[in-house]
Amino acid sequence: MDGFLNATVLLSNFVLVPGLAYGAQLALGALGVTLVYRVLRFANLSHGDLMAFGAMLGVLSTWALQAAGVSIAPLPTALLALPLAILGTALMSLFIETAVYRHHRLRRSAPAIFMIVSVGVMFMLNGLVRVVIGPDDQRFADGARFIVRARDFEAMTGLSEGLSIRVSQGITFAVAMAAVAALFYFLNRSRAGKAMRAYADNEDLALLSGIDPDRVVRHTWIIAAALAAIAGTLYGLDKSFKPFTYFQLLLPVFAAAIVGGIGNPVGAIVGGFVVSFSEIGLTYAYKKFLTYLVPPAWAPEGLMQLIATDYKFAISFAILVIVLLIRPTGILPGRVL
Amino acid sequence: MTHLVAEEMRGGYGAADILQDCSLEVARGEIAVIVGPNGAGKSTALKAIFGLLGLRGGSVRFEGEEITGVAPQERVALGMGFVPQSANIFATMTVEENLEMGAYIRTDDYTETVQDVLTLFPALTERRRQAAGELSGGLRQQVAIGRALMTRPSLLLLDEPTAGLSPIVMDQLFDRITGIAKEGVAILMVEQNARQALNIADKGYVLVQGQNRFSGAGRALLENPDVRQSFLGG
Image (cartoon, each protein chain N blue to C red):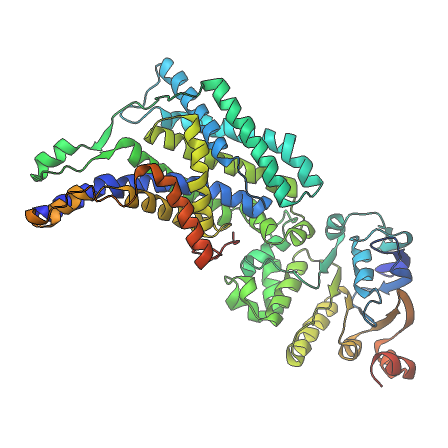
């Protein structure tokens, strides 16, 4: 019995809890991608670097608040910096819209052109972030480290394996849930949200109904930027902030959006967790887990790891290929808002 | 003063004029029907009246005001409602949300208008929380017309509202349209089902190659041997 409990705790430490946190980060990123795709009709490849930009603002605001002696311990100061990061990222997004995308929207450029343009925006943002904060790792987490500490859990239960949940993981999940709830409330209940869905559904009829397309586009960018800033800051808080990792996040984020059904917000959330659990579940070494479950004589000698961690990005890509082969519209029907 | 007067409209999408001196009129409470062969410019005439097509000649007067250069969105505010032939609903949104979007430009309380529309189309009441795209063809047209009625227009432009509907559903829809006209709304519609449409019409226009070929009371056109022979199949 202890073996089973120990195995469960072990799996929750290394797969379940990190998977939920990482999945929530991917889901937030994928929601931004899916929203831009549905309303503005192009794949925004600069979303990963918009996340980096938002996270950078989060880091800088956190440092500023720390320097000013502001603290909400045991919670991390970054939580307080989040609204500032969202505001700055939204302004940046609106600036990019006015300076770059607006021109192509008025010319009614093809989606492929928008996508290429977004690659340019991606490089610009990427460069900007490196110029401002540098390419290195930055730490900005403070406050308490653990919600549940392994040693306390061991003492409490007498198990040899201790459950550990970090504050950053708990906060990631809680903030992501709040952001998703707010987004769905906006889309389904508010007038502006309904206008956005109407515009995404039938542009011509939306125009006939008196919906202002510029307003809808502005709202879309503000929301995408807010989601990017939240996702980026949470990811940085959970792991650490390094500009390059956000560029790499683009693949799992897009995989999540497409796997769930691109354009479908619920799909983006489902896709985020599918990708995160596949990545973590396949790269985890199950040796210790199995040792708890089987008789000592059967204990495995190898790592029992399906795929080396170095290949984790290949997993998103493989999921993407499999889903597109078997169910091209994604798990939930795509192109719905 | 006639509610809508379109005089000698000329215009088209490219270099060639589809409309060649086409004139149409409709008064409040009246149903006017545009019929004619394929490619005669029926839908184009409707779009020109709604401002979706720039005119090279002629004029459109609405409530006595010249509105030839006014944008479609502004014409909605003036009291025009337009139901396009296809893609005329927000398919992923509920029936209620479709009506709400129809009232988007209104700043006053429109709950009463929602009630009026649901009274006119009772079948929509129990489906108000269902996605409009999941409804049958007849109900989708009701949603489309209901959406346009949300601004309480004084002129309703309908582009082939009964296209693809079964005869029974078509008759029901024509009944409703007659009901809307009785409330004092001017109705101008393009119809493929010429015989049935002329039957309920106060006024009919037969359009051929962008020109008025025949016009007159609906009944009179139905009985006109020339019209019967060339457009109604004898």
